[in-house]
Image (cartoon, rainbow, N blue to C red; front, side):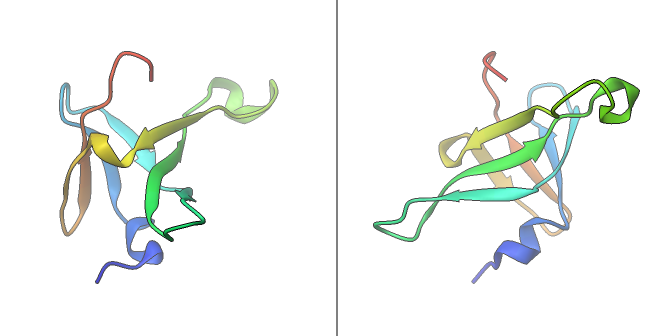
Length: 80
C-alpha cells in the first residue's frame, strides 16, 4: 500500500517531454470513497512567489502513468 507521505518524496515528471513539474504538495480525495482523485503540485514561479499567489498543477489520477520508487510519470494535457 502506498501512503500519501510516500508520494511527497517523488519527483513528478511529464512523460511527454521529461519536464520536472515538482513534488506533490497535496492530494484531492473523494470524500465518499476515500480514493485519491488528483495530485496537487505547486508550479514553479518566477520571483520566488513574491508576485502573488502560487499556481498549482492539478493532475487527475487518470493522468498518472506510473508511480516508481523515485518518480511519478504523468501524461498531462495541454490544460496544465
